[in-house]
Image: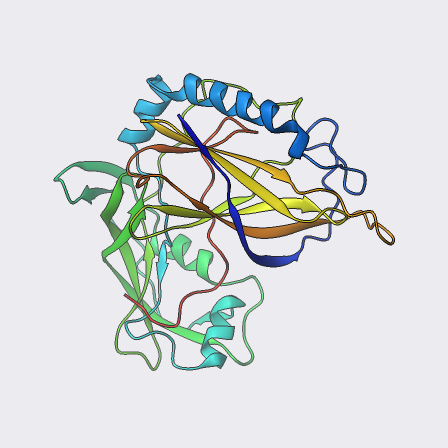
Length: 299
């Protein structure tokens, strides 16, 4: 097993909430430095790795469909301008046409090595609702004029996969906005429970995995009165366990009861591959949520 420290890649935003109670003994404004708790975090990471390595949960994870990349792709070439990007990010998408009322109930998720898995599919209307907010209209907005079932590529815990997708036609665009229709597999029951006696907070989300698999970017929580988040990594042949903590507290000035979100890039000794990416605090796979918004160029 190897352990390695992380590096911060930028503050996202103040979360505007107190996260007292996520982990026993952790507070929003009173949490002290976690650097003295290195052994505690390392022991917990080893426990998580030992519980998962070779477990039925790990086998189920490797056999399932778990996206680790965006399930929505913009039209080829990207959105036209900042107004359209603002409309997408604000979910200001309106329907000016008809969507298919029916479609296949199941579809095949296929990986490059020839492996495949049959998964239930989300219908066109349900997929559209994941793109459009509850309040739409006005300007700027994007207009959906129709949809058909097709395919798209999605990054998964088992590598890139071709999945059934709804291809939504957008007014003014020659290529569609794609939304994966395949429903992810249910998370396996973890072989270890959450930790209740170590400092720090669970990871908020997985943002991205580098194309070469040699680094992962996660969002970690930290208090308003410390110097930022730290994420250490324990690597085994079958898993990668991330342990989040905080840098030494900064007691200067008034301390507000507020949690902050911070992107942290974690470098790995070797590509992640099909190893399970785990959160030491929860004992579960780090959830992929990405970041709101899309890149300026589509696939």
